[in-house]
Length: 70
Image 1 (cartoon, one colour):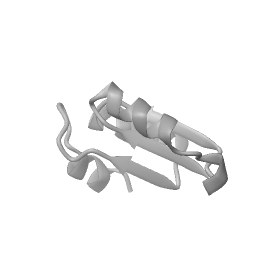
Image 2 (cartoon, helix red, strand yellow):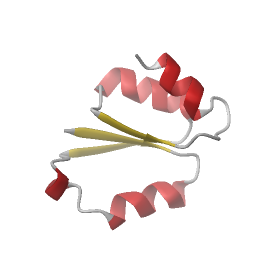
Image 3 (cartoon, rainbow, N blue to C red):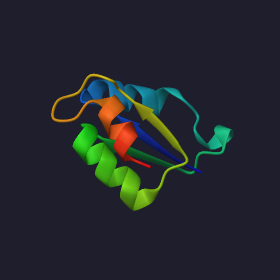
Image 4 (tube, rainbow, N blue to C red):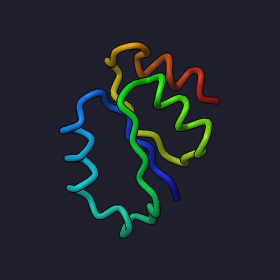
C-alpha cells in the first residue's frame, strides 16, 4: 500500500515518516509533497491508497487538493 504525506513543513513530514513503523501497517511506500499543487501531481501519478494532508498550505490548500484528486 502507498501513503502520501502532504505538508508544507518539512520537519512535520520527516517527523511523521520517522516516528511510525509503516511496514508493520502494510505501507510499502511513503511519498511526500510540500504543498497542494505537488500533492495533487503526486497523487495523480502514484495513486496512493492513503493521503495524510495538511489543510493550510501555500499555493493550494489541502481541502482544494483533495477535492481535485479524484
